[in-house]
Length: 600
Image 1 (cartoon, rainbow, N blue to C red):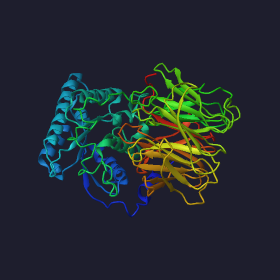
Image 2: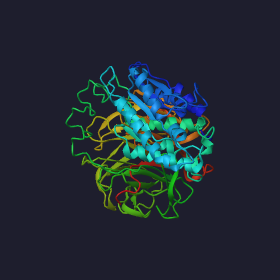
Image 3: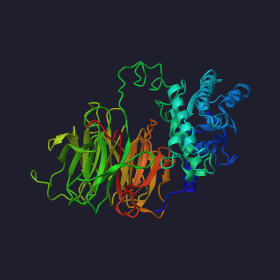
Image 4: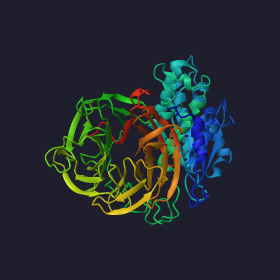
């Protein structure tokens, strides 16, 4: 499977078919970029290779309603005091920016520190930080025409190779002073430093640089991605004209982000908001044909820690599925439920990882028995599909649902509190109305009255439909997804108000639907010749407050994991081959866990 290139990413930006019922373009959102030649985009000034240009393309690809205007006011050679002076004398703030993106300081250090006199370092650092603070204060004193105050997103300054390791140490010291002393910035982030830094040389990564100071096109693409991630939850989502309770509608009194709403759990005046440290990771599990192993990856697609084995007995080689679970009821999914896939018995295990890297078993259950036999499970070797949710409405996502994926009728079992060994309480069980083709499971919030189950055929022949059930077996809705000739099963997942599907034994065609079954979006993940089964899961891997869609192949394809925004925008990271081996041809299971080293 070929790695996706930026050309394909750009193609996906502009090939999405927007349904006719989607609202037309509305409000313009302006972002002001302030800085020096890195912001200006040297040596690509005025081209599509600069980070402001790339950022605007990324932002615009995520919406059919808003128009993004990324206004580049970077000036080559500028110091912080010059940015401040221009901000005072020019009309930049009259553009009424919703967001001001600030990254400056490199020229101050290069021009004002005497390399032969180390005593000049600290005064220049302090003066530059003071000028950055004045820039932020000036922006925050501005009121836009609509009465809003611009949000300031402040970036650490990136590394360079101009003055050797010593020069990078000075930049690092400057960034530390920004972190410790600046006030008033709405967002502070450091990935523009860390992602371009080479710990082996103590300077900038030369593969990302066009010269000793300025990034190359790949480096600018990383910077654009980092700004997008830093903007995160500050960005609005498109209003849904069909939904009067749209939480992004400013006229909606039920808006949970309305600061005047005393029931808002994000209101700092509300003491009930939990504060839990998060350390999200993508978990991958091996496919069939080898003993089960697990590897964690960070938001950049880099492996974290060693592979974990001994998840199942070593003689089991049927592959494993995985989903995160809040087994210890702290409001964070910091354990994982792992279950046998193809050619495996119907066993599920709940596990967690301690800070020392050791694995702890938190629960275990044979969730199905041989039909007609209440004492044994030995003859079932078809594997499971499982999901996790709050099915007993106790406020914790610690319950599990399961169904078989082999040639069995779609019988779904729902268990309360997946903890302990072989004693999970059966909450409910019911059947879906399609034939003996197994089923796939996921969860979705359909109407706010508890967590619903998404049920679909695992394989074929079966009509490509998604069924939405309450946990007690009430059918709330169903709808067809692909054309009738795509009849070999599908995988659903729920993200906020959308349901995403990927086909089995077909192309990597992702469809997005609202809860009524109206198609809202689509895209292809891999090249069209790549055929097979594809898994899609949701998770907020970058902590921007919005779930991403993470896709992996299942079965006879390489373990290439790709990530998309919920809008279908391809993300350059995480983008990796699980287990570091693109020659594998047995697929990979995936999940996003909220806290890798949790309370275990």
